[in-house]
Length: 166
Image 1 (cartoon, rainbow, N blue to C red):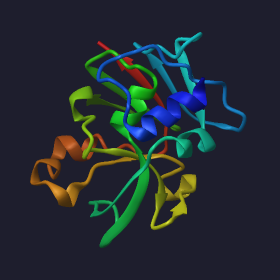
Image 2 (cartoon, rainbow, N blue to C red):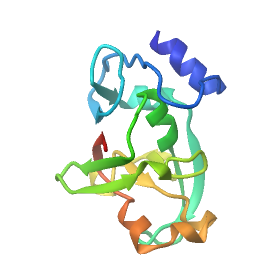
Image 3 (cartoon, rainbow, N blue to C red):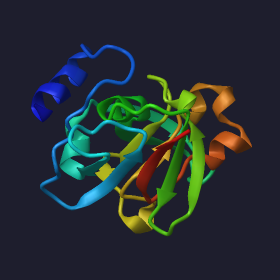
Image 4 (cartoon, rainbow, N blue to C red):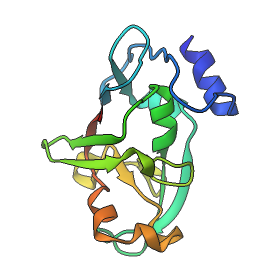
């Protein structure tokens, strides 16, 4: 079932809106937990290891950030794709880092050409010291609307959990 859903996501056959998801338990170390207003099949919590995130359709873009010098290439799961995979049904995401720092992201930000949950920086995985293993990154250079203080504040690194609220 998980493979079929991932294949449907990859091919773009999923209908818009929440639907029952079947997120299998991870085989490796959990790098992301998604909870709250989701439907993860038999559980209200979806846990992902890196292999599971890499199995979802990925997006890549090059952008500069206020935390790095120059433009860099980021690759990861579009936030919209992840939310579809867990059948999220809310208006706000509470994203939390390994050190318990948390921010809120409007679920409206999760558009196809919007932010990704990056797991690669310039073609390699990111260590915790390098803002990894997961970093929510917006394509800042693609749209001036992304270059605001409020959007910069949503670009949380060392991400390890997301709660779908409201």
